[in-house]
Image (tube, rainbow, N blue to C red):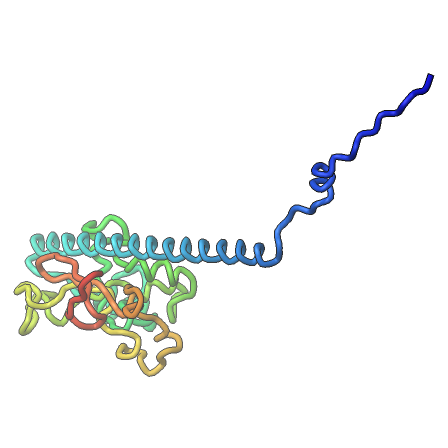
Length: 243
């Protein structure tokens, strides 16, 4: 008896699948990397914008708290408190105090919001005396003397030239008239402040706390006697829309 062996033709389709190589080309990999980079950039920008908005909100809340504290002091003493001159966690409105030479209390000027608001209990948290942006940027470093964190050079500026302080009233444009400012982030910027000659080097290496795009580092908050927080061009009372 003759036996015939059956013959099956090879499955050409299956063979082709086995020998083909599946993978990404270099161009495809580059496209994927580019997309990931773009998404990361968008996420970074969005995070920065969210952080800036949070800092601005915290700043406005601080200014409201301080304005209310000053009003309370005025009701109790019939006058507004004097400004502090020197940087550091202490009162420095007199001619003798422990921090002489530490550097200006309010960025470019010597008129910082009074520490006595904390000492006398009108403000519960000392951090309220400082612009959050500067506390974040200058948590390191130190004052010129005293070894305090550098943000102590950035208390809110306080208009001691036009307020009721030390038992006397300011001149024309007194803050109680509502025509001039009472508190703001800086007032005197890095170029026009006490150490302006050093700009842009330390200790005049700072900028205004707010702004985006063309306005970055050019804006600040200001408060008048009506307690309304306004965004203005740094060092002026000129309002800016959209911020």
